[in-house]
Length: 389
Ligand code: PMP
Ligand code: GLN
View (tube, rainbow, N blue to C red):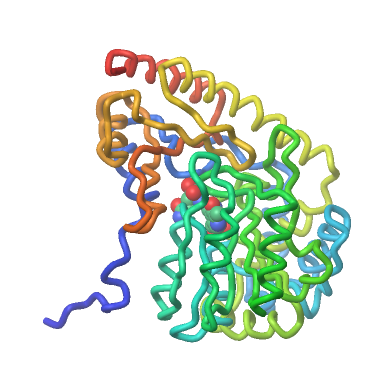
């Protein structure tokens, strides 16, 4: 038999999120690895989905998304960020941020085009590059603050660079890139005439006065920016997989071309439900942040108490922790031990680095979980004190 795996996929690993969740389930560990809430999504959004299904909104949606959702998204970007996006020409509904990343990267790049990506990165970026022969030019964020290094970024550009891909608030580092960092990216994008693709799925989860700034809000670069986001984190429904991309009319055309033959359209009744969800008022978003702040503080206290060195969480629902105090120098081995011997699952961050810049001392815990489960995780983690060196 011929090898069923294409050469392109050969070096793509099995998703670390699947690996860790499966191992956590097998050993009954509290799963603080894959980032999904273990509490229910808001009832009013579920009701809107039930209604759409009962009202027979069950056939193909328009490929670019239902008009009601695109209109509400346009209003949202105006209200939150004072950004104007034409719902017909500049907003495309996609099947989660994952499909958005795929449709944008495939729609805009040819094999051999270079794209600048910061390390540590969200794993899907590298895999999608691989699908299409796009060349990722990765550069590390400075350690330990995960800030953007100006000279490394300047050096990463070449005549083949087509775009730069950023993620803020950032998974896994939790950084919320500040105005100066975003301005630097914008200036270099203009100098080198490249696009900026920005993944902002955690836009509504920020802490300690760190404000999410969409890079599209710098008016001089607005038409170079492709903003990707998703409802998964904001409305606690990672299984619904509805996302979107905002871009100029010309760029949207390219995204729509690839999207129509990747999924064609996204789940129709869920689009109706999110159009309703977007009508909710500001208090929803304030409450979301307050709830996550409580959870962050509980987990952070638990981690510090048992001897982890933690990094401040600026945004997202993750905490990065250094495993060195426990005598481990391999994050994957540590995560396996943590699941099997301690009963808690985390993500080894070496999976988010290339060979060249790999670090093996960091793990990522998520706190998008019921408070009682975070407290139980803290209790289990107490056993780690026996291993502290
Ligand atoms: N980008 C980042 C940075 C993520 O953490 C995730 C995971 N939610 C995604 C994209 C994928 O989002 P979705 O579930 O909407 O496909
Ligand atoms: N975004 C989620 C995380 O970072 C996982 C997404 C996935 O499972 N592919 O944990």
